[in-house]
Length: 330
Image (cartoon, rainbow, N blue to C red; front, side):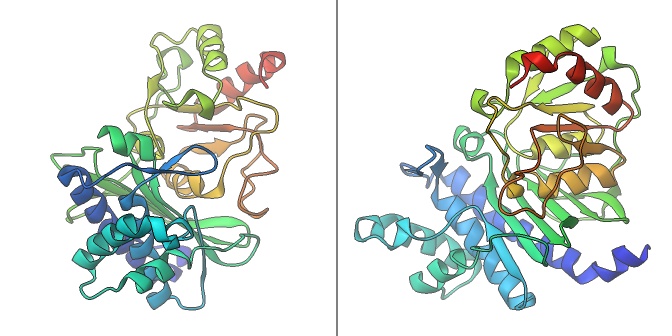
C-alpha cells in the first residue's frame, strides 16, 4: 500500500460509508416515489427530498469524524427554512431519521448548512449529494459524489452509483485514493475489485460518453469530433458522474463535456470525485485545452474550459481533434 493510500485510510473508510448511507436514502426515496414536486433553484435545476437528505447524512458523518474539515456542498437549507416549505422539510427529516433515529428537523437543516465552504487551497470535502437529479427523477443514472481536496488537488474520491449494475450487484461504489489506485465495490457491501480503464488505443472503436442535458455540453461539437476521427458508434448519453464510473470500469473510452458557451465554467463538486477515480484507474482528465483541472480556485473550475476524460491512451488523439476544430467550439 502506498504511503498516500495509508495516510488517507480513515478518510477512505468514512467516505465509503457516508456515500453508502446516502445512497440507501436515495434508493429508498426513489423506490417509494416519495419525490413530490421538486423545488426549482435559481439556475432552474431541480432539488428533491433525496438531495437534501443525502447532503444532511454525509455532512453529519463528516462533521462527526473530521470536525476540523470544511465541506463544500451543492445545496443549502435556506429554502427548507421558509414557512411555506414546512412539508418538504418534514419529509427530509423523516427520511434522514430512518438512518439516524431521533434526528430533529433543526438538526437536519443544520447538517445541510454545514456545506458552505468556498473552496481554495486548504483541506475540504466537496459533495454533490445527488449528481444527476434529473436522471434520479427519471429513474435512471445518478451518483452520490464525495471528494477530499487538499492543496488544490483531489486526494480521494468516492462515487456511489445505485443504478449502475456491476457483477450482479444492483449498484456500485467507485473509490480512489491519490497514488493508491481505484477500486470497485458492490453498493450493498462485499469485497472490492480493481477498477481499470479500457486498454483500447484505436479512436475508431472508442465508446464516447456525453451528457443527457444539452445545456451541459456542445453535443454538435461532439458529433463533429466523432466524424473527424472516424468513430464508428454514436455517443452514449448518461446523467451524472456515473460517466466517470463507467470509464473507470473500462466500459467506455472517452467522456466529452465541451463548453456550450464561452463563459460556462464547471462546478468543483461535479468533477472532483470522478476525476481522481478515472485517473487512479489509469485514465486521464483535462480541460479541452489539455490543461489539468484546477480545483483550488473556488467553487468553480474558473481556470478551465470543459472536460475531456479518457482511458489515457486515446486522450491525445481527441485533444488533437479538438485543436483542429477549435474555431467551431465556444
